[in-house]
Length: 280
Ligand SMILES: Nc1ncnc2c1ncn2[C@@H]1O[C@H](COP(=O)(O)OP(=O)(O)OP(=O)(O)O)[C@@H](O)[C@H]1O
Ligand SMILES: [Mg+2]
Image (tube, rainbow, N blue to C red; front, side, top):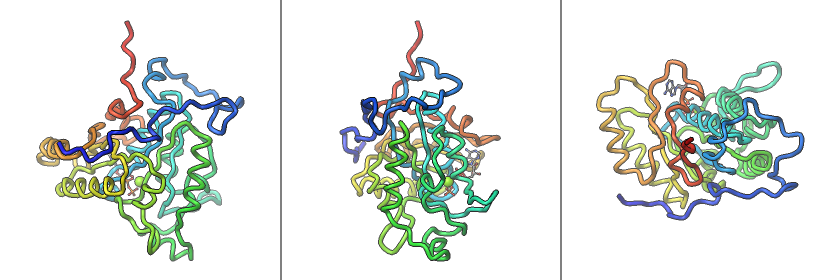
């Protein structure tokens, strides 16, 4: 297989020793996580983990998979926070703008930061972000997103950033979601929505990720149609061609919660993650 990825582990996947008193260190009043993680789970999850979750298209399971990853991190005892930097489609609830993706990520994580940080661009119109932004007279820029990410990173052990739509969604005339992934310089996890045409979409996305010098850390197959013909063959074709590990195949779930999806994802294929210790 032609491995297009840099063999070196990306910085964000490498466990970082946090000095007490430093920005990333646990603070005395950090909430006690309940329930306490099993010791073997603590072994399995890296001390630090950050990733950018992209997908082959919109509505193919990025939020579900991002929430599942957050769920695993929380179960492993980490302070985990989701970020949806640009959300298009928000409604006022009790005087505050809410977006479904941002809400699901917040519920799956365990770090409570204002939504102005976890979603710096919360746009009302459910449309392409540059259009939704223009309607509000807003220009989506990199700097506020990078500044918000830095704050989240300082308050968390793990950050899962969900992209928008597919990999190359315009934000303004010369900044798109692929540029954002490159500026964040995070390892990328690709969610492939299984349907006819997904192989080409996935391979084009992989090319675009690698072309930006980003590390494709792994990919997840997500079932969109439970009775898709040749589903296994499609996954096999993708496995042969994607130069990164398949982290799981999520079936069509009756109740698509973070916990339910997490059962089908195994992050032990990622650097820094280990299979839970076998008890003697
Ligand atoms: N495996 C699954 N089983 C059942 N429902 C699913 C599954 N995957 C996704 N869904 C549902 O499909 C819808 C779209 O999924 P999701 O919101 O995760 O997609 P997305 O890629 O994040 O979309 P967007 O581009 O809008 O951010 C959601 O209602 C979600 O619950
Ligand atoms: Mg989403």
